[in-house]
Length: 462
Image 1 (cartoon, rainbow, N blue to C red):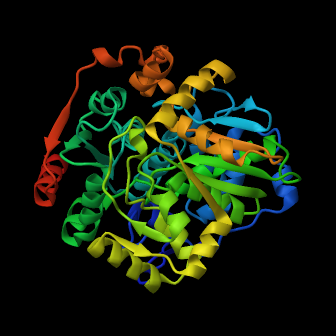
Image 2 (image 1 turned 30 degrees about the vertical axis):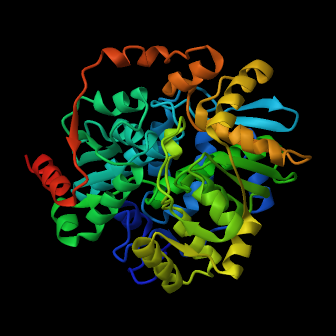
Image 3 (image 1 turned 60 degrees about the vertical axis):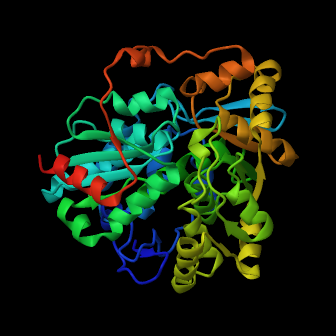
C-alpha cells in the first residue's frame, strides 16, 4: 500500500512514512494510491464481532507491512481498552429509522479518541522500533487537542504541542488540555481563531529547516491514520443496521471534513452508503460550497458548537482530489487561490462529483438550541451542540433508508449551552469529576510564526 499527495509532486510513501510525516512536502495531504474494496461477504462477516476485530479487518489492508498481524491487533486492543462502553461506538434509536451513533465514550469524551488513542499506540510502536523521536504539533478547535495530549502524554519518544484559539473553546475542552501534567505535553493558547491555529501548523510544516530540526509530525486530521481509524465505526454502525444487504445514510456534524471523509472512504471500500450528509453550524462554508460551487471564506463567527467554528476545512482537499480525477496540479491551483484570494470556484464537473457523494445542510444558533431542547423533551436524549447540529440537519433527509447521525461529543463538554437549552447541567463522568480542581498549565502565544517556533524549539531541546 502506497500513499500519494493531493498536490501531486511529493514522493509516494508507505503507511508508516505517511503516518509519521503528516503533511506532504508539497503542502498536500496523503491519501492511498488505491482504496481496497471489501466484498459483500467480508462486510456481512463483520456482524456481531467485537469493535476491535472489525477495526483490524477494515484497517489491515491499508497498513502494508508496517506491523505484523499480531502487532497490529495488540495495538488496537490497547487503544480501545480505556473506553467506557463495551460496544465502543453504540447505536441508539432516536426516532423511527433515525439513529444516534455515540462516539463519546473514550477518555476525553469526543469522537477524536477513536483515532487519537490508536495513533498514540502506532506512533509509540513505530518510533521505538526506529529508535527515533518526533515533535507533534497540532491545531484544535477543541477536541483534537485534548485527545492528542491524552494519547501522547508521558511518552518518551514524543513531545506534543497543541495550539488552540484563546477564549474560543469550552472550559471543559480547555482544562482537558491545560491540566495535563506530563512535561512532554504543552497547551498553547493562541490569539486568534482555529483557522489561525491551523495556518500556523501548516506554516511550520512548510518551514523545512524547522521541520527537520525538531522532527515535526502531525496528528491533526491532515494525518491519514486519523481518517483511517474513523472509517471503522461507519462499518460497525451500517452492519448493525443490515449492511451490506441494506443501504444506510449518515449525517455528520462537520468542521474540518475529516470525519465525513472517513465515510467517503468507507463507501469506496464497498459499504452501501446511500447519502453522506454534511451538517454545518453558522460557519457554513462547506454547505455554501456544495450548494453554489464557490468555496469562499467569510471569517469565523464564534458559536455554541465551537469545534465546528472553521472556515478552512483541511480535509476538503482530499475530497477535491477525488472530484478532480486525482489531478494534483488542479488541486494545488485551487489551494493557491484559497491562500492568495480567500476562495476558489469548483468546476462544474467536480461539483457534480461532490454532489453525487455529499449532501449538506446547516443549523443556526437558534435551531441548534431548539434541537437540544426538543431532543431532551421528545427523544429522551441530552445532546451536545455539535450533535444537535447533526440531528437538526438530519430531519430534512429522513426517509425509508436508515439514517445515522454521529454524536461527536458528550454533552458535559459543553454544559453552558446544554443548560441554557434544557435547564439541565450535564455532569462529567466520575473519572473526570475533579477536572476543575486540577492545576492548569497553559502558555499564551501571539499569532506569530517565529515566536511559536522559538517556543517549541525551547521546549523540545530543554
